[in-house]
Length: 321
Image (tube, rainbow, N blue to C red; front, side):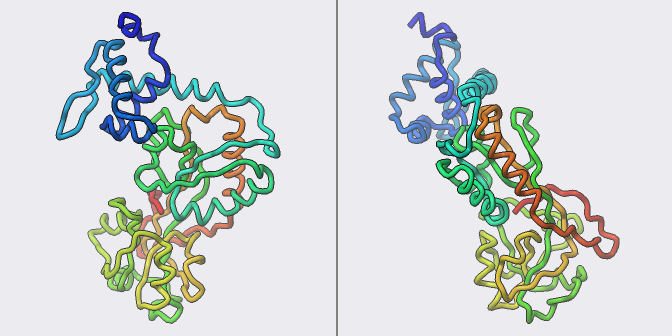
């Protein structure tokens, strides 16, 4: 036990386990994520308690919560862990012979706009490289912190200095509807827009799109008659109804052949980028992939939003899709 009281005797595997328990708030969930049993997690925590002279976790609301000392340890040790993992990456990278797996967390928008050409290029240049695509939603940053994904792609605000971030593309919102809709082909006035029957995409969570926040700022709300979790649902809904939906302009043309797009009174421009950690920052393979994705995103055609009517400022709002 005396040896375990020396922090230098603690290995990176134990630190990784501590970080996971802290983020999940559960020994059992951490055991499940690591593919081990709860007794192994408990033994590791006992070693860490002895080494750092702290309880690390306390019971709270039917679960556990990290102590202030534990939060400090996890924050510092995570940087060391990610730095070490980065050093383990090969210095050289040959796409033609490279193998391995890269995990990307993103959502429907990125899977429709950025990934198709990215995957095609990877298949052509690095055919042995395997990609795993995960749905990010509100868990993207947590996936990165836990090392469950290598790259997060989406309209995420990145304020944590421990993350690296690169801009990929700009977009804004437009309105889509069936080509025979009464409002089709018109530049919508605010009154027409608000009163129309809307199908609102919720993206499967509590997050609100930028155009909805723009409405909130004006004290306005849409006549929502349908909510759907994904833009893909509109493909089957809009052609058969009198509904209007508001979606990012880059994806509007892929909704359905019978659907047309028109400018939105609340275009709310936003940015999409990619985010990663020091764990993969120095990896030649990951750097190659990030550069490839940025180059592809930079070649995608884009027509900026028209000036908002009635003196509304377009603004620069970090919205999402």
